[in-house]
Length: 449
Ligand code: FUB
Image 1 (cartoon, rainbow, N blue to C red):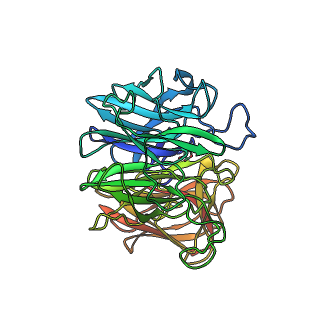
Image 2 (cartoon, helix red, strand yellow; image 1 turned 135 degrees about the horizontal axis):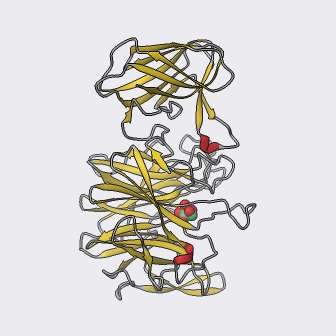
Image 3 (cartoon, rainbow, N blue to C red; image 1 turned 90 degrees about the vertical axis):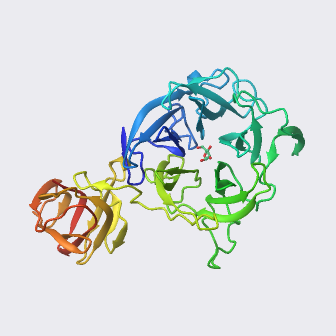
């Protein structure tokens, strides 16, 4: 299964909780893998049996390197719990350490384990035991400025603890405390790094270092139903935002800084993310439920660029359909993954099979979509439209405002491809627009030759 730069970046299967890492100049994405429960299909909850890893060199084409770990291959985990939630992976001294949560075989709840490989794509071999002291989900591991390793996790708080260099156990220095939960008392290991943060932390911590600072980023539910939102109107969409805090120390105290991303536009209750620098640009990987509009536990990984202000604070990321990267003019360009839109509408090609993707519906003269960063290379001669249906529409195609092609579509109620000659020369990288002159049409993709 491959993936393209447009969002969602992983197509054909569901994916969530992406941790992106750069190893040896290549970017790898370690997501969790949502499925519909094979044992209780009607059970509407998270269901994950294994992990895949994806890689890309250009942020445009992602390659699925296959399954790297299955729940059956975790000695300490319940092999039938479908609880392979959000993972992380780091490299140390030429070995790759994959951290993952799963339901424990003996006892209750989640533990966090480590699987080790010689290559980023595995094969990973899970260690016999999970990490003692961690009862929770969503591990994230960083190397601090002091050269020590720290693990963050969620579930019953947002905890951090120094971890030994071989990642076999927490460091002896890690504090613990007795905590009351209802009528039970249990030992909580680590430092509660959410102590200085506004209420609403949920899960999925992702920490990183930059310019001498520690960033703690995390899914955060702001307010309660009916509370006023930023514009004063009641904020009813109380799903997870992505928020962040900064500190001079891995253990905090962290100072709350604000939002990285607002609540999901598709109503997905969870969001879960990672932030990575690759070839001089920072990126936010996150998930929404684009391929599963009715069930938000079948999610899909997306990626957009992320920018810092001069003072180190993070600018809010607006989720896009276009995603990142430069699209080759000769690829099938799905203009429904637009950069901007005026009048035209986007819908599933077939809502009963969302993995088929979307179509752009041009219905009124002047309807227009713009798709940024298309690479025409040394030039193209022809343009093909993947048409879903048309009543004989006329459309024009522009590159940075200059008209480069036009089509007079053959009326058709069934899919067809129609090719026209370019009316102007074009080479290099441009933003393209497709605009309706008359009639109406539904378009799947366009592609230049
Ligand atoms: O994917 C299962 C859980 O949903 C993750 O562990 C959380 O962070 C949330 O995304």
